[in-house]
Amino acid sequence: MFSAAGVPFKLSPRFTGYFVWARVVSGDPYEHVRRLEESEIVRWADWRGRTGWPYETWIEVQFGASATDEQIRELFNTMPELEPDWDAVNWNTGPWWASIQVPERHEFAWIVALEAHPKITWANLSFYLYTEQ
Image (cartoon, rainbow, N blue to C red; front, side, top):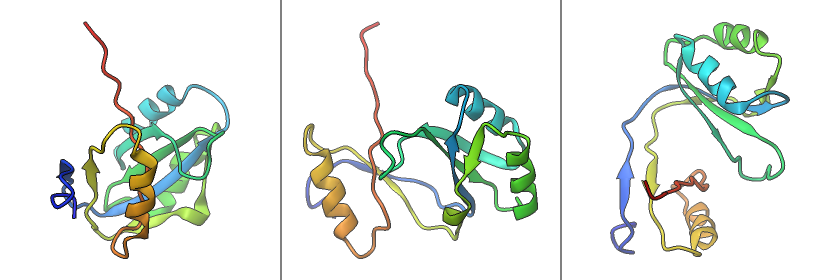
């Protein structure tokens, strides 16, 4: 699909584990990400926008396959500044995700087109900023 449209893309490796969105109630999102990533059960955490929630700050957290529901809840209990969206907790069974680069000012059109595809669960923006040294 991407190759046919001439859009560069990169597939991620497959992974399994819990995937949780947590709303930042207070504090510095960067500090929360740092603290989360110190945990042995967290594969990665990233401060990013969540589609449909434009005025709130969210952190996306991917837990390792061996993390239990109880461990995840215990971790978030130590961080009252974060409010996990327990209704949106997913056990990721290993689908692929891709990072694609689309033409400037066509980002939202691509999101709409991608989300309309039956094999794509969701699409959102990731921003990379380039500066001169």
